[in-house]
Length: 334
Image (cartoon, rainbow, N blue to C red; front, side, top):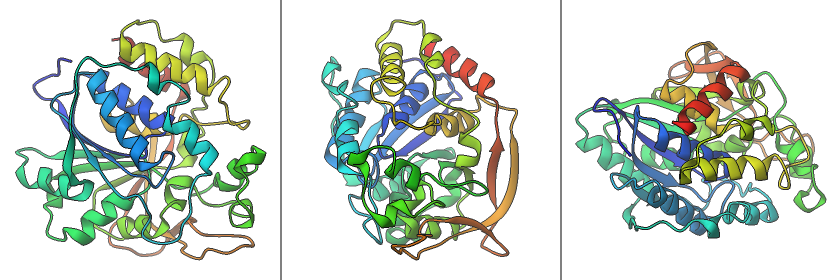
């Protein structure tokens, strides 16, 4: 797909859930973005093998020959917090849609681990690179520890969908939404954490404690944009990217709904990184993460404001659902 000469170079760090896929499709259609890589983590909504295959297939579908797929972590730095396997099974084949995708080309998987791929891209780039973090922070934490001399000054920005600051988290609600998702008291009693922090809270803490230029898009902002069937009706284009987008929206707001109100999640953070939304609330604060995993009143992954830190983090607070849906449809239909 044609990109503008001044397109922003972006690396997508992702667990390849349904909302991650929508984000990738959006960026492939956005003329202001050049995807240079997708870094996959198995700490999240898909198992690493299937998430890697899905990322590769999407790039092939969009003829994104300039981009690489790099394989990241399959286990978190600490704990074994994970999505229930029945849910991951559903995401592994994109709710049954993966087998319908038959690209006419093939892009090989990069041989470097995700954190080394990012370090190499930062070392050789002639212009700053934006990173959109759509899963746990494990790959970025590994970048900091395995490559402490990485040229992180070449990171223009990191937008991350993660955390819940002033509102409840989504671990307990998700755990209790369906019987087959029940993973016990550790999950059932956690009312404070958001999944992308909960899957690897130590990695999140390390990134929060770093000097990386981080903008956080927490659940506080995501709940302004709730997934509903109206999103699908706005998609009128018929190219493969648009059709897949429409099918995902139909599946997730229909037969594969979660039984609870679901924000649009990652596409919101993605649109903010890409500059598609210019009117929103933002503030700055030092953030920390609770690392105590307990069976009762579990606080593990709780993201909270603290009095000191390495640098303040930009935190998105409020956005417009109408502005999001109009821009999302405009880019996908473009």
